[in-house]
Length: 193
Length: 193
DNA sequence: GACAACAAAGCAACTGCTTGCTTCGTGACG
DNA sequence: CGTCACGAAGCAAGCAGTTGCTTTGTTGTC
Image (cartoon, rainbow over all chains, first blue to last red; front, side, top):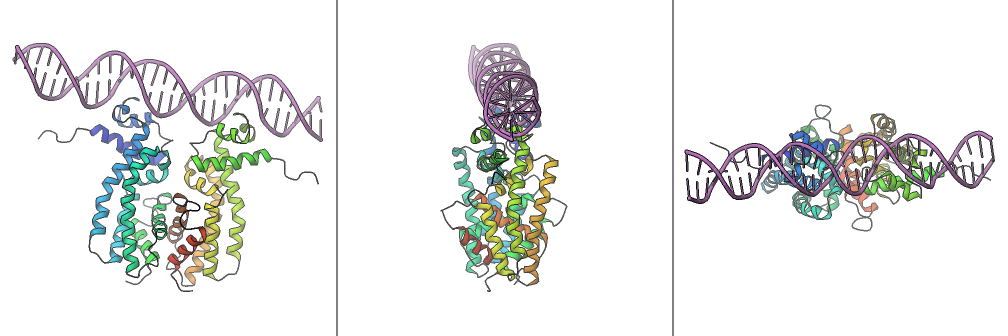
C-alpha cells in the first residue's frame, strides 16, 4: 500500500497550476515565478521539469486534450440518434470549456500563438482529432436532414458559437450549462423533436 | 483650405500602426518600441501622445468601435425585411472583423483583459451599443418567427459563431466573406426565403 | 519667444533561464 | 549491517536581456 504514482506528482502539479494561471492571466501575464510560487517551488525549479516556459504551455494543452478526448470519442462512437448525439456532445464540450478546473481550452484559444511552430505542430495533431469528431457529427446531422450544410465552415461556425462562451459565461449568473446547451441545439437544428 | 485635420496625424498613425501590431502579435507581444519604430519615432516619443501603453490599446478599441458603429446602426435602423437585414448585418460585421486593415475587433476580443478596470469601463460603453444593435435584430428575427429565441444567450451564440472566425479565416483560402455570411445566415435561420 | 513635437539617454523593475551546489531516498555490495 | 555511489528533485544566486516609462534637451513654427 505504498505509492503507485506519486512519481511525477510535482510535474503534474506544475501543469495543473499553470493551466489555472494561464487561464486567469494569460500566458504573458503569468511569470514562471508565479507558477513556481503557486506550487511552493523556487523560481528556477520548474526548469528541472520543463525546458522552457512554452514547454509548460504545450503540456497544459496536450494533457488537457488527451484527458478530454476519450469522453468525446465515446459519445461520437455511440449509437444515439443524431440529434441526441449532438446535444450530448455540446453539453460535454461546454463542460470541458467552462467547467470548474477545466482551464485548457481557453488557454488553447487565447495563447495558441505563443507556441513555437514546433510545439504548435505537436499540439495540432490532437486538435485535428478533436475537430474530426465534430465534423463527423456535423456530417451525420446533415445526412439526417437536421443541418443545412456539412461543410467545414458549418462546423467552425458551430464550434465558434460554443467556444466563444469562454468570453461571456459567468458561473452561477445567467443561464447554466444545461440551458446553454439546449438553446444552442435548438438554434442550430430547429425545434422538431 | 489649410488643414482641418492633419493635426493629430501622428497620433492617428500611432493608433493605426498599434492596431495592426496588436492584432498580429497581441498586446503583450508588442513593445512600445515596436510601435515607435513602425511610425519612425524613438522609443520614448509615443508617450508624448499617450500616457501609457494601455492607453494606446484603449484608443485602438475605441476608435475602431466609433468608426464601425455608424454603418451597423444604419443597417439596423433601415427598413429591410428581417432576414435581409440580418444578412446585411452579418456581412458588414464580417468585413469589420476580417477585412483588410480592420484590426480592432480581434484586438478587442484577445486583449480585453489587458485594460485597466477604468479603461475597460470606458470602452464597454461602446461595446454595449454594439451589442444592443445585435439584440435588436435578434428580437426582430424572433418576432418574425425566423429565430427560436430572443434571449441574450441566442445573441451571444450567434455573435460567437461569427467572431470566432478571426481564429480560422485565412484570406484567399477557403470560403470568402460572402460565402461565409450566406452559410451563417442559412444555418441560423433555416432556408426559407 | 512660446509652445508643440519630438530626440537622446537612461533608469528601475522584471523576466526567462542557467549554473553550481545540496538534500534525500534507494539499491548495490562487501 | 553499514556505507557508499548515484540519480531525482530542488534550492540559492544571479546573469543578460527586455520593457514601460521618465527626464531633459533640441528644433521647427507661428
